[in-house]
Amino acid sequence: MPQYDLLIRNATLVMPDGALDADLAVAEGRIAAIAPELPGDARETIDAAGLVLLPGVIDAHVHFNEPGRAEWEGIATGTRALVAGGTTAFFDMPLNAHPPTLDAASFDAKRAAMQAQALADFALWGGLTPENLGQLDELAACGVIGFKAFMSNSGIDDFHAADDLTLYEGMRSAARLGRIVAVHAESDALTSAMARRAVAAGRVSARDYLASRPVVAELEAIERAILYASETGCALHIVHVSSGRGVALVAEARARGVDVSCETCAHYLALTGEDVERIGALAKCAPPLRDESEQAALWQQIFDGTLPMVTSDHSPAPASMKTGDDFFKIWGGISGCQSLLAVLLTEGYARRGLPLATIAHVTATYIAQRFGLAAHKGRIALGTDADLVLVNLAQEYTLHAADLLYRHQHSPYVGRKFRGQVVRTFVRGHTVVRDGQVVVTAPLGRLLRPV
Ligand code: ZN
Image (cartoon, rainbow, N blue to C red; front, side, top):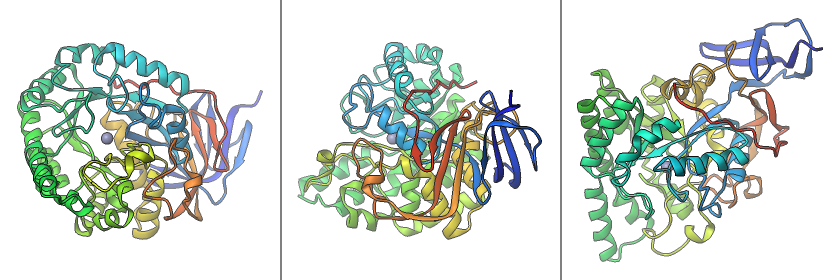
């Protein structure tokens, strides 16, 4: 009997404190040994000389639309795209599937759909809406990773925005239940009124849409959410922060003791408002893409540690929903989960000199810590799950639509040059991607619960 299931030799391991040239052994799905020139044998040995081994990405923000709207994406296609891009665990949002995840029955339905198809481990967000304040306890008992609320219109009829009282009372319950509340932070009062005014005047271009969701709408909502969190003692997470000033508000609140965190998304780091005008509807999202000065601020905050988390907010839709003359009517959501790590390796490591350890931190380590998964996930360390991605940093490629594994092969990243090809992806030691190709079809994803 070989001593290990898997031996990865000669890779550069991206450890929490920096790079380490060593061998890594896996047994029973966990990292069993790390050392230079490890003695022993394994059922499979990989010579990874010249390659970099990172912790698998944990994408804390995707919408896979299943059950109920699998024609938009689906778990099978969505998770194929994830693992191809180096992601080994993900948190699915409570909306854009139907029914939305608002109670135990809808949680169970989504969990069953995930277990039947997911190629990566998963956690499920529960919703916080005016209709389900009475179901937060049962959702916590089911094991939701947290509760997601919208402070502005969600864009979909079956998931209603949380008014202030819902948000305040929901945070009180979440504090009691020990769960994080995540908010889409944009002022509905500002964005709805500005959108109505623009549409009434016939101003419906991409630039008009961007102008209807100014940074101040994000800042006002972030401040209000922080106030409620500080009053209730609830742990708060601001999803998809698009502006440096938004991240700064979160950092200031954290410094004075509020339990608050935030994420930005790869598209805010890779694309700007000018790209929305050039690319069109495929680059529509909310909050919208900003100008270069906000993007530069976000990068600076990743470098200095103020911004410790990046997600994809993969929010796919059929091509028919991503076309039209009225930019306000087009579905807002970017297909991008396959390219999350690629954006950070290319725009961060290769272009700006961002350390690989920082990339591991913002895509995995911090997320596992923040959401109660750090015992098994998020870093390369003895005893943790062997969720790993092996990358060839020397390899450049241009992303073509045919490379996308989404149900609908469109993305604002198509045509873009990337650096750093995913060679292998391992989920708990299982090879799910080999030589860049997804090689498993049998589902293996397990539910992750916060502890
Ligand atoms: Zn989202």
